[in-house]
Amino acid sequence: MDTALSFDGALQGFLLDAQVLLTQAQECLQHLELFDNDLDACRCLDNALDSLARQAAQLGLREVAHYTAALQQLLAPACHEGCLQRTALPAIGACLTLLDWQLELVDTRTGRLNLDIGEQLVLLGELAKAVQQPAEPACAPCNEQGSVCIHPRSHVAAGTPPSRSTPTH
Image (cartoon, rainbow, N blue to C red; front, side, top):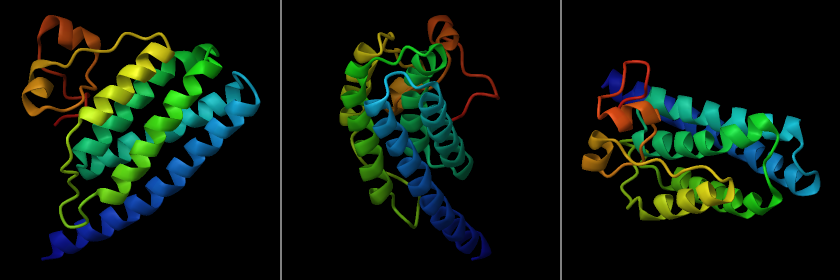
C-alpha cells in the first residue's frame, strides 16, 4: 500500500512539474517565433524537454519519456548549432501540443498512456524533415513494443541492445 501511495504522490508531483516544464518549452517556442535562432531560447527549450524526458523515465512513464526524449534528440543538433529554422517552429508547436494532450491523459493510477503512437511518429517525422535530421529507425526491442525509439543510432545500426546508461523500456 505504501508503494501505491508513494507512486501516486510521485506521479502527481511529476505531472505538476511537467506542466511547468511544458509551459517553459512553449514560452521558448514563442520567443523563437519573435527572434530567429535565439540561442538562449533554444537552450531553454532543449533543457526543458531533456528534464521532462528524464523525470518521466525516472518515474517509469515509458510513453511520455520516449516521446519527449525523441523530440528533444531531434531538436538538440539545431538548438546547439544555432540553426533552428523558422520553418520548423510549427512542427515543434504541434509536437508540444501532442505532449500536453498526452500529459492530460496519463492514467493517474498506473502512469501508463494507452494510446496508439501513430500521431507521435507522424509528428516526429514532420519535425525530422523540418530540422533536416534523419528519422531514426527503431531498434528491434522498440519495434516489437511499438514504441518510439530513443536509443543511440549506433545500437540500431549494430542491432545490439542498448547499454545500461540508455533509458530502458
